[in-house]
Length: 230
Image (tube, rainbow, N blue to C red):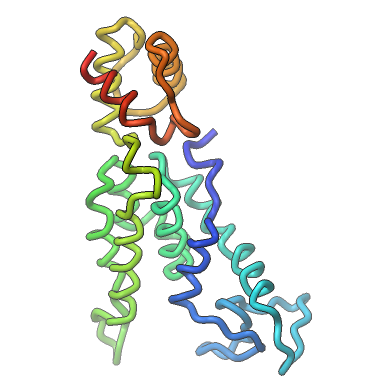
């Protein structure tokens, strides 16, 4: 099971994408001449969206939620480090705009898989270019979207200020302490796995500490601090 298998795009994540994609509630032709509706939804041959007939905003978001599933699946398959909700939503927007291949080929995602979360926003900016008159150059609209995605990626969740998110560095620090306590007995590698999960669980139970709702992604700062000072 992957570290992000339980994640899906949040309502605010869908609204973030809609802000950049725009929303048209009647069928129209996109710049490629393809019939489109809602938030960039390409109308399939088996779908019935008559010309001139408006859909509801709720339906537009329902279509978007279905369309981003290919991004969600690619993130779960390609991103090997745990993501919080804002990070997941930002990457969904990135892939929805640039194609799911970015999760395998972009420096942003390669850097992320190395545990370098802080470098991701800058790496996203490399995907701000478009070919204009045959010349590849920065497009202001794409630049602004990549910048906004980077800001969302770096934004703390509402409760995150009270937690410590697992990165390669924080996992190495935790595994080192757990090894000294005799709770972790394999190689220190900065990767969340069954041995780390079991050791953290045992530590928390011994000290009567909380682990929160999703300890494979983040734990309460009080629990982390207690471990590090042990």
